[in-house]
Image 1: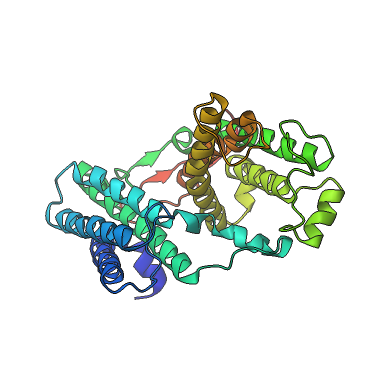
Image 2: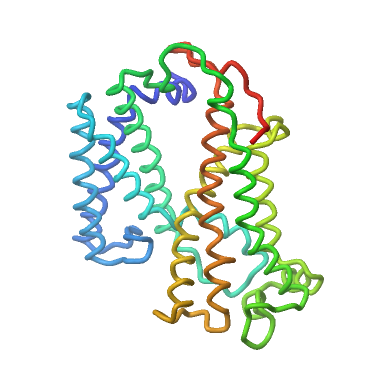
Length: 336
């Protein structure tokens, strides 16, 4: 069986894969708690040590029990909901891996902390677990509802309106990043609203490379450029011209960006609002609270809108199901 064929038959093995993955991951956490080697286990990406390792062993051990129940109780309706809770647990363990592409920007920075490769590999394994568990939950739910486990359809053609990418989601995603991109560009141009400190906001000679400083001197903030690329991704997922681009890279970028930025932005928005009301003080004393809440918190709105756009794009561009025959009659995009 080729890898492509194996992936195509995922509903038949996703439940067993979730069980094996959970068992192995829990065993690794237990060994780390007992022997103390740095396997990279952590909860919420930060808490490390014997306590979090023991907690991870218990939680993922319980996940293995749940996976066994998925295999043995195919008709129980509450099991998929519990499985999605395991997906969330995996994402909390692997969340830093979703932000790991920032390591590609190391050529624009210096004096950064070295990469903890053991932790990074562990985080990617946790993200892999989230993918496997999401497939297991989806397959179980579809079987319980009596729909096709491969596509969720009922063996007939569906109209294009049901699968048309949500153009408005793309526009919302773009709008969510406008405050951040505009603010960082203004800072690079020497206009500093929301910044009360000394020096130049957005660039620190201790950590920014010579190339990054040169770009900043010409009014180009690298993170603002990344925000523009994020806007382009959202539009590619929802506009007709995006159909001419490779499907899998768009889906990978869309789901990764949504999974990383939605919770990250929610955290920053909550932090900024609490600082704005005076409930707490944050470690960004030279930034006005509205900067953290509005500009940085906009990542949450972007992530949620990007998830909506990616899901709509995925459904609209899928091929006819070879198992049940469900297909989309038209794959046109556009419109509201």
